[in-house]
Length: 221
Image (cartoon, rainbow, N blue to C red; front, side, top):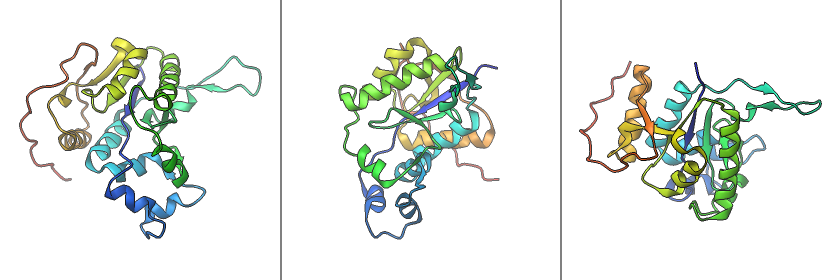
């Protein structure tokens, strides 16, 4: 079975939820973690910042990712493991560090640095690391699949990734016409069902469409 890696668009670092994390005296547990040397997984941080949408993306990607098996590289000892950097197969886009595995731990200083860079396809500090990691992923994933869980209507993620992956960049076709909350809810339902969504190439796809019917209430076990 071919490997499959998911690329998750980032959460915003402004707004009320971000204020909770950045406030110097907040007793919120996640904020306190971010003030330690160990920090907290970036997936956990972005899940808090974004709410339902990122929670759905993270849960779905963790459920269905198939990371490539690391291979020993050709360099002299100690030889690096190719593809080991991909981790669990769930990569999160950052504003100025390219893509990192969702389990990568970050501290408050990292978030403050992220907040200094505008996420835009023409912003060099955002684009250069993303181009670098996308090229590395293309090399290390072989014939595997790359699936974007993020807005396909915005150029800020799609343009850089298409420039590297072309027809190989996929997305869930059921995303078309849905808002962020609906996408998050849909992904969580698919995790509950243990069933993946169909994927189609981003290139040439219809990225805007009619709003689909509302989701039925989520069944709880």
